[in-house]
Figure (cartoon, helix red, strand yellow):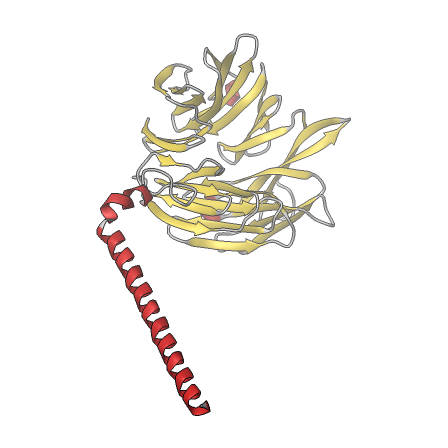
Length: 384
């Protein structure tokens, strides 16, 4: 009886095993049939799941021709590199060709990244962080890891950079690097540096600092050559708080303050001062001249001031009916952006061309015959 029971149990086990194997096989066949059915009918259901290259991808910015579409929560900065557009988000750096195709996408871990461009180079650095990188059109030119957090950095010709960092010993430190990323100049400073403007040949620079005199904020300019230990010239107690600075003439400097414009020759001689007629909105400078926009709150309008020859002291003013928010001096044209229009003016203060906008744009970049208009959800390219 025990032998019979053992044989019976063994047979039952074999039957259960065959049943489990058959069920697994049937499940497999069912899965294959479902997958085959989905594949055969894919044309009916697949379109709703396809990535639309003209709309949003699973990334921050679309791939394809202009206009580029920006994901709703994505914050970005943009600049041009030759005829290419560089777009920097919190996590990635995108390079687009002139036609809007993606040339390169790279991830970055910079916190509070700042992007600048000059002379076919871009400078990306981490404000209040320690990383920076200089790129040419073809490749990474060099990368640096600073010992102390970066306040601000400036870009010169051929990839020269001036980096202002925090310091335990000084108010701040100035480090200058050549086109290979080698440090060629160091300066410990007793005033807070706000900007650095390189000489055309990058043999020296003009250091703009913020100081206090008799309880008032003032600007100071220090001209240095990198192969000399002594300052070339100094200009102090300039009665305005520095906003931005540009090169002028032969190693001179244009300074836009919060209340006044000032221009200096290459030997440090002050050529001109121009107290502002209103609240400064924006300012820019090119080899053709300096331009400033001022707000007229009472008339809901903008005043454009143009200085082409500081030595003469002359200022051309144009009263504009539009409320403009950005100005760019570019070659022999002045470009101004409002909520509804992008306009170009000559340095004589006369309007040349206008481009009506179908949506508000926060900023724009100029390259060649085109402008890139930067909106909240799109970046558009227009011939202008």
